[in-house]
Image (cartoon, rainbow, N blue to C red):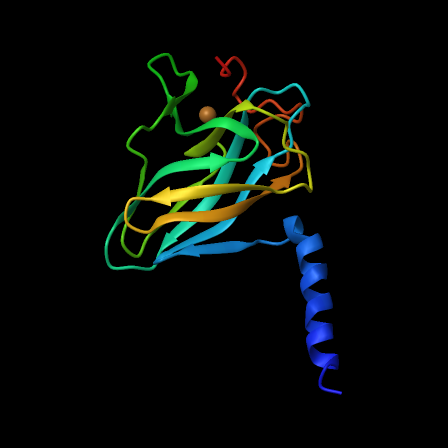
Length: 170
Ligand SMILES: [Cu+2]
């Protein structure tokens, strides 16, 4: 009789896993909470894809996101968007990573800091999460899964998959 309960729990777990990209999923590395790491679907021939995540530092010391990997990408950089002297939005790598203040939160989001998956081995497809890692200066490396959300989900980036990353694949 007791076996009913584990079986039910197991079925629920499978259901959650199979619909995971619809949910805000979370990971944890020491005091850092990693909320909904995600990418966006891109056209099949895209050479780069962006990644987003919210990082919350529950600890009493600042930490720093120093590197990211994704299994779909030959290499991955951390970027920030900035307006140059001509008023043109550009992006540049942040080689020292991103500080997450003690008790604070940093959002990697369109138009701001973001992860750049480069030298793509395959394009991210909506609903097909991929594995990766986030490495923090103090909290260390944690394995995560990047959900893949629909192309052009946010406004302000157009709906053609244009993310300002064209010509960025080097
Ligand atoms: Cu970028």
